[in-house]
Structure formats: C-alpha cells, structure tokens
Length: 353
Image (cartoon, rainbow, N blue to C red):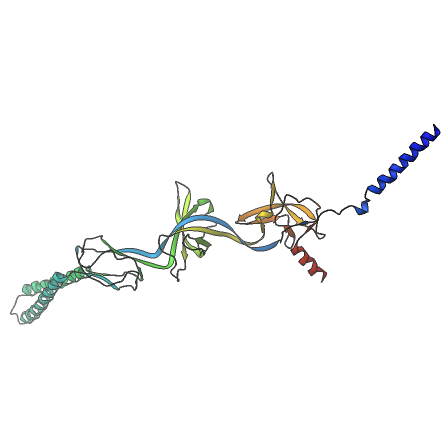
C-alpha cells in the first residue's frame, strides 16, 4: 500500500513538471498588436456657414430689339454675336416716303421764313396788317413741327443699340415686313452678370449687400465668385422667402443669360477647427473622435460639432489645434490600443531632433 501511494505521488510530480515544460512563460507571450491607422492633425482654417439656393443668370442689361412701326426691312447692319456700342445702327427700315415728305416740309419751312421776313418789312411801313404777319408766323411754327414729326418717324425706322453689349441671333432678313413687337435680335450687357435667387426669410439677418457667394453651373467645372448687391424690400408671403441679387464678373464671357446656377452663400466667416467627416463616431446623438496620445495610444474623446461642409465638420469643443486624431478605420479601434501611422513617425522624428 505504501509503495502504491509513493508511485502515485511520483506520477503526479512528473506530470506537473511536464506541463510546466509545455506551457510558455509570461515573458514569452506575444505582445499586444499595433494597428496601422490613417491620421489627421487638427488645425484652424478659414470657414463659413453655407446656404444653398438656385438662381437664374441675367445680363446687366437685357432687351429684345423690336420695331416700333410697320414697315419693310431695308438693310441689316450687324452680325450675329457682334459686340456693339451704344447708339450703333442695327437695322434700317424703308423710309423713302418719309424722306420725300421731309424734303417737302423743309421747302415749305423755307417759304414760310421768306414770307415772314417780307411781311415784317411791310408791317414796319404800314403796308400790311399785323394779323397777316401773325398768321404767317403761325404757319412757320407749324412747318417746323412738321419737320420734327417727320424726323421722328424716320428715327423710328433706324433701329440703334440703346446700350453697349453683345447681340444674339438674327431673326429677320432684308425685305421682311415688320410689325410693332416683332423680335429682330437680342442685346445683352454681359459684364457684370446678375443672378437672382431666393432664400428662406429666416436668413434675412445675415443676407446683406457685400456678402460673398459662390455659384456653379453644369456647363463648367469651376465655381464663380460673386457678391450680393441688393436684397428685395418684401418677403414672399406664400413661402416666406426673400429674393436677392448678386453680381459676377464676366470679363471672360463664359457666363450667359438664362443659365441655372447653384448658389452657395458664405455666411459668418471665421477661423474654426475642421476635421474630416469620416473621423466622427456617432452613437445615440453623441459624437466622438479617437485622439492619439503622446505614447501612440488611443483615447476616445467626446466632441461638440457645429456646421458642416462636404467632407468636413466644424468642432466647437473636445479637441484642440495640433492634436492628432484617427481619420478612419473605426471597427478595430478601442480605448488604449497602440496605433502606428507614417505621419506619427514623422512627428516623433521631428520631436526627437
């Protein structure tokens, strides 16, 4: 019996020694993993609140050239797309009849002037009555008025540009019979360009002349910068919106009247802390970011966010300028986890030097 107990004790001791040889020590256990992440250094940037709206472009001045009278087109003095100056002749209508009547009226005026001078001499010598002279003077004034009338009728048949600008397509041909209101072409002063748009009346407090805005159109990839010039004096009672007008420099002639523009108003310009939108972790209305501490470990930090713009978020509190945060890669992250990134190595090398 004693021999049996001794054998059991020896077997237990041998098994314990074998287990120790098979189990690795704490010193030989693998270290905690280091996760590679993409990082971003928080910094203050120029920032503005953005309000979007749609607007339609129009020229600084825009009209449709039409005729005031019914007559036939005699000559066209412009080319399509031509830039013209104020007062430049565009179209001449038939005016032979009016020119003939004008010549007759001028001849009548000359005759009336001679008769008045003759009667003035006779009245001085008491050879003619004063009433006869007065009648001739009245006829002289009528002759002058007749000339003014005919010159106005001729002017109606000479269509000129009321302001400098660019002409559109020609819509009539020589010999065409025009009536009042018939469109001949368009004329637009396209520099600067005006943009009319509407925004909610709640923004009236910050919508003031001089406010900078940007606008884009599907026709071009670039954005155009302009400024608000005037705000309407009335609020639309049906949708509680208010109209405003902005001006854009168009010295290159890229913008055309009628283009639809997507307007982006830049309100409340300021310097703010901006971080990538992908860096925000949102859980139950609470926003946080992963901050990388000096020893390259993660710390979850609650932040308060403000306005947004595509790809970026304004941070009001929770982080400070110069701190490094994780830009993305959330699923594997946890408090106290060691991380690495090329940007972190550059920062650490800079601090060591």
